[in-house]
Image 1 (cartoon, rainbow, N blue to C red):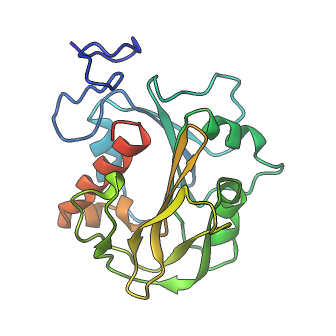
Image 2 (cartoon, one colour; image 1 turned 180 degrees about the vertical axis):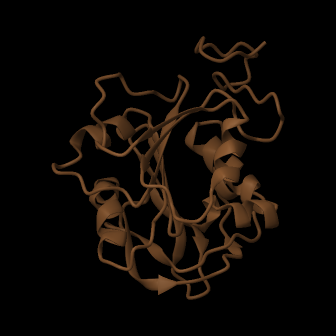
Length: 233
């Protein structure tokens, strides 16, 4: 029987610690660290919804990565960060990039203040992973998704006043678009960096209560993204 923490593929299905007792697609063994500032709109439903699965949760507003704890690998229980309105690092995020390359998973969202920091702050971390936010504010909804395991089965997700996602170097084939806005720019892109995975989404509305309670595909969207980041897809 599969169990959290032993780092053994007990059921021999090719995945380590893939416990999902609620059978909701949200894997109980994932460890989540939130790096950033909470949005102004209520997001308790999304937070509690993820916590109820058994996710171990931690918040950090400084960093980006100061811990000397060894990073995860694809064969161990994975961790990832949710970055929204992240502070600008005071130094090049070398250790952050190293953590991702060693097997860490990162999901990034934007925030909104109306200033350049809306893109500059998250870009200070993402650009080392070949992703950034660009352009002016744009809206969805997003109804065009590529055939990628992170967004499998998703047909419509809200997107309101966010930013397009772009590749810093478009020639790197491990960075691909997985969701498209009505103006044909990317709502989401994924990047494989070493053994790690990155999912960049151009908006923050997917974390708010209004979307979790009114759009059934939002929890499904989160399940797909976290499963892919955790190497369960």
